[in-house]
Length: 342
Ligand SMILES: Cc1cc2nc3c(=O)[nH]c(=O)nc-3n(C[C@H](O)[C@H](O)[C@H](O)COP(=O)(O)OP(=O)(O)OC[C@H]3O[C@@H](n4cnc5c(N)ncnc54)[C@H](O)[C@@H]3O)c2cc1C
Image 1 (cartoon, rainbow, N blue to C red):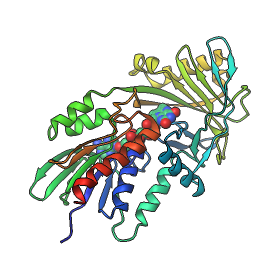
Image 2 (image 1 turned 180 degrees about the vertical axis):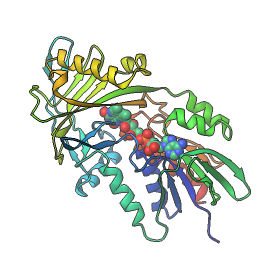
Image 3 (image 1 turned 90 degrees about the vertical axis):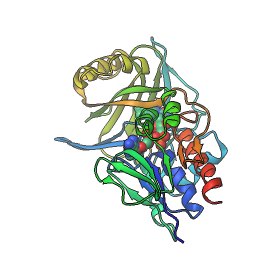
C-alpha cells in the first residue's frame, strides 16, 4: 500500500531540515511555501537600478554554529560551496565611537548569497532516489481540515489540495502559525501566540564608490540602529558595493507603520551621525520584517501532537536564529518519525 505524503509548510531553514530528515528516512514529503523561492528569512534581495544589477542579504546577515551537529552540517555546506566563513572586521558602537571587537566568533554566510544553503538543500531533496521531496512554491496555506483521507490544505493560489496528507508539519513564524492553526488546532495556536517575535526595519544601500568606514560590520548599542554592515564584503559577492542597516527591535516596533521613505531618511541619518556616508550619496531600498527574530524563543525544540499528526517547528520554538531553526526542524522530524515510521 502506498502511504500518503507528509506536508511540511514553510521552506525556510526549519522546514528544509525537517523535510531533509523525513526524506532521508524514506518518507514522501510535499514542501509548500508561499514565496517564489525557498530560504525564508535567510534571504537576498536581487534587483536592478538604472546603474545596474545589485544584491543584498536583507534577512539574516550571518549565522553562527555552536551546536556540534549543526556545525557538521555547515561544514558539509562549505564543502559543497554553499557556505563560507565571513572574516568580518567587526566593531561595536557604544554611542560615542566605534570600538574594534574580538573576531574569534566564527560567522557563516551563504556563498554568493544568503540563499545558497537553502538552494543546496532543495537540490539534494529533489535528487533523492525513490521518493524525492515535491516542492510547491507560491502556495500560501490558509487552512487545514481533517478528513478520512487525512489532512487537506486550503491555499490562496490553488484552493483545496487534491492530496490528503497523513501529517502536517508547520514551519512558519509564530504569528503566521497561530493564524493557520487557530480553527483546526487551537492548542497549537495557543502555544504559537505565546511566542514573541520582534520586527526589524532594514535598509539596503548601494554605492558607486567604496564607502569609507573603519569596519565591515558593527553592532550598534544605542540609538535607532542595531547593526550596520558592508554586505558586499562577504565571500563570493560581485557587483556594486552594498551595505545593510538594521533598526533596533524597539525602534522598529515604534515605527512599524511608518512609510519607507521616512524610515530610510531617519536610519541613514543615524548612520551618518556615526561617521557613515552622507544620506544623499547612496541609493536606498527599505524592507520591513514584521516577524524578524524570535525574542528569544520558547526553548522547547519543537511541538508534536501524535494523535492529530500535526507538529510545529521553527526558530521561535528553539532558541532563535538559523541554528535554532535547523535544530528545531530536525527535532520535529525525529519526533514525528517515532509515530509515522512505526
Ligand atoms: C533582519 C533579520 C536579521 C536576522 N539576524 C540573524 C542573525 O544575525 N543570525 C541568525 O542566526 N539569524 C538571524 N535572523 C533570523 C533567521 O533568519 C531565522 O531565525 C531563520 O531564518 C528562521 O528560519 P525558519 O525556517 O524558522 O523561518 P523562516 O525563515 O521565516 O521560514 C518560514 C517560511 O514559511 C513561509 N510561510 C509563511 N507562512 C506561510 C503560509 N501560510 N503558507 C506557506 N508558506 C508560508 C515563508 O515564506 C518562509 O519561507 C534574522 C532575521 C531577520 C529577518
